[in-house]
Image (tube, rainbow, N blue to C red):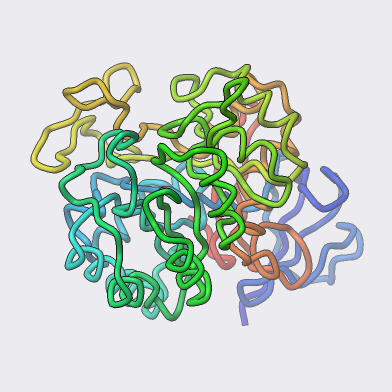
Length: 379
């Protein structure tokens, strides 16, 4: 039985940051939160030097990291590399994300995630299938040659992961509402994204079971006075979640502040949309046969479209504090607590609370990552 206490930290609890409390970890879970003076004698203690102790970050949109891109190598080794690359920046849970591809590649990726979870690869929570059921007019860097409308057999394949979360991003105007409902009925979480849909088409998708929006503002119809579009539907709908890429490039800070003002608290999630250069030395990668290179931290393909990002979750949290003016506690919840709620995993992830998995990230005064723990194991 592994048992120890983390002490001398400002720990983010449900009651905001608290100093002077110890986090007692036992067998990979939080056993208790208690005053440091009340710790049992002889229990090993780890002094965290007064740093910020946060719930580990959960990223629901990770195309690549550590030099690996899931589309290029849909296997367990790639998943391990992605987690290693992102864990350095506080990510303790992720949905590896496959962008639009052939059904065979989708099946391989799902099988790899199933195997990784079965083997206990730390941090792999499920899979995000971003396409191929999306709109050519809002394709971004996706290959429109892969786009299609799924039939019953493909819906069954896409929702076949039986030991983790499945998230599917689709264009609601491209997929029949009955098909969306079937995906939801099979247990998938469905988001609207890469969509040229109208407000009315998006509302129909929400009524069919869509509960989120992938990288809000990007690759979707904008909010206008007489045409609310997808963005208008997303901002109006109180029940749905929206993912945002807070890198200062994908979305203007003012637009992000509008989203924060419009959505109920807890419905805005930080995501990275990260590519292989996160946690790797090489700024380049290959996608659909094209070499793409990050220039000054911005990732674009040859046509000039944004092609994911070079963002990590710790930087997203810092940007949320520095660009958007949010308190660190709220920025941290946008990277941990709220994603866990969106993924329906909030009974065991996303909080520093008794009974929850001991997934933490320690930040210093500059909000740089000093250490991470997954299921109580420090990296």
